[in-house]
Length: 244
Image (cartoon, rainbow, N blue to C red; front, side, top):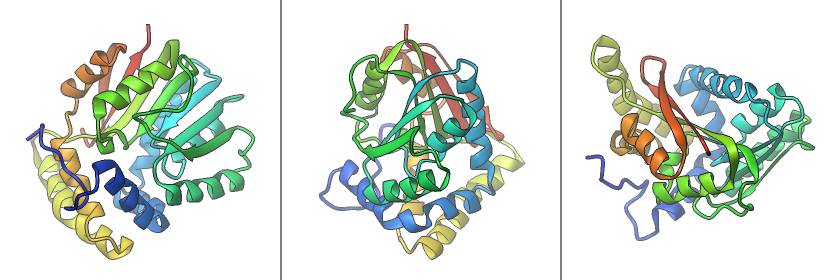
């Protein structure tokens, strides 16, 4: 199951093209659905990442698959003198993010632009930290994307990745899986107007190599001291690593 490739749609476009099209289509409702469908817990997860970042007081950060810029904005608000670059393949998401950046009066420290995680347009050893929140499972080539993230990280810098995970056994896990597989896709479809986006979400999580498997992929990409921390009963995981 873990080696199965899941795409948003059944057509001849590449996964990358399909993902970009999907997020361009749902961008107008993306932020609302993120917060509504997660009951606001996604904000707490990003705060955990920012607190982890703040321990090292980075000055240059790259946020990969930045979407509408939630993590980039949260980091810039919390960490003084931090300059953030964000990249994403969906222009409509970036347009929403730019509006939020201006509203937050952070345009002098946060810039987001079109960019491909598997071909990052920045020099080697450019950033103190590289992050990605709920975007890595959408990469067409996860290994290549992680390798690129390693390339642009400075020696001694860190990577922090947030991704959905799958809780283990028990009552919570049972009800969560029912919600994630049935209720979330239905509500997402009604609100976003997209038939596939929130069906693709649980499908992509189910086949994604999470926890130990993903930690190994980080190590294979060149990062050292890789680890993961389950969040909210294992619904998500925060992965960390360092560049030697």
